[in-house]
Picture 1 (tube, each protein chain N blue to C red):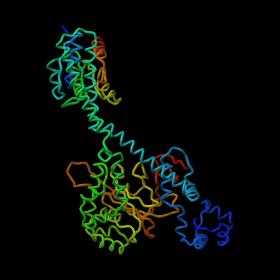
Picture 2 (cartoon, chains in turn green, yellow; picture 1 turned 135 degrees about the vertical axis):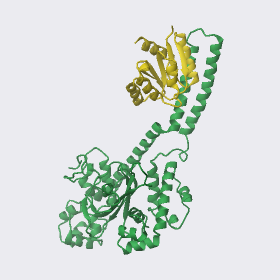
Picture 3 (cartoon, helix red, strand yellow; picture 1 turned 60 degrees about the vertical axis):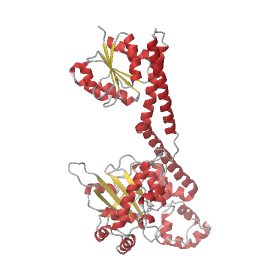
Picture 4 (tube, rainbow over the protein chains, first blue to last red; picture 1 turned 180 degrees about the vertical axis):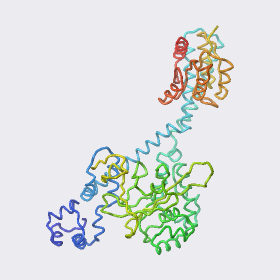
Length: 412
Length: 122
């Protein structure tokens, strides 16, 4: 409660005791109905805002921070912590984010050491030259009698290999000392792409206006070639969606039709996955509901992620198997509509649309490649959708009787 | 008659050094630089022992080792592998495929000679 109003005055205004108000403030008592409405009036806010309490994005990040560690923490009291100490809570979230980024960086560098053919080739060249020099030098100083011809050959070999060693060492140093902009990515390529798209709000006005995708890729300034390649592919899909669903017409139709992806797919002659992507690219501040998007492959890996407050999904680590994006794989081509709730979000509802489609052109005798796309819309109107209680990750999920549980929860 | 060693290795100066050391130790050494044609060389020049590099042009030393162990004539021929790849998984793979010894570059001449002697005496 940020407004400068004394606790005792507020308690008096809503006709409860200061000690009871104190419990409410520290999230030790849940309130609803008339009392919630009265406090909201006194604080000049809305009951919804008041009920939501601490910033749900921050809570998601705190829970994710807890999920990433083995220690047992009082996850059920995360909201209380965030409410009382938002600065410290923000620090926990920021440190967890930093830790996650550093872990990914270590993994990328480890992969680079293991699999980078350029680095492996340079190291092999150095080791081969060192081996040849060592053997030849050992022969020369080994005390055996060598005739002049053999001595000359091994001296020449050492000289040749020393030149080779110098050249390969220099190449290795150049490679390792390469300026960051020219070196392979220090972060996962998709992280770079998502950071860029997130900064644009996943809405690319230049492409909406018919801008040049190649120029925009250059302008994006992504460091790694892999990230640039991913962004090019994303832009290609984005442009196709723009062509099929021009912004003005699509936004108007979406609003008028209550954001029904199946109806819009029929109206614009596209598949449902394209409509879900287009929803996620609608501009912020145009009175569209907040919408998140995830794209997964059949391994469960999230290939693209636009988050929405309250529905915490992370691209790294295993998520909740009950997310509709995974259920979609079992019903290829059949769109799912599910009303999901996350634990610890005061019953906030999320409408999830998910559909799995064939990736690329169909081919005979080839493995089927599927992609599932899921849109997450917060606070949807009450509807007749199937209701599912989902989670973030098993370690921080309090749902006791979940058939999908992989491991015990740290909070039960 | 001198025992025969086939050295399958693509670095000419390493070939020269190892050939020199083993020749001085009484072995007849033949060298071959290409992985793809290595098995033909093995069959044309049946050796008493094979020194086999892992990283070869055309075909890896692991693949060659697999073929050596699959054919009766070379199933029991001692094989010493040479590699700059000293990772545990490479050593395990070599052992699983039937290598008798695994030597990591850069090695010492004395180690090569001593292990060749030991393998032949085993």
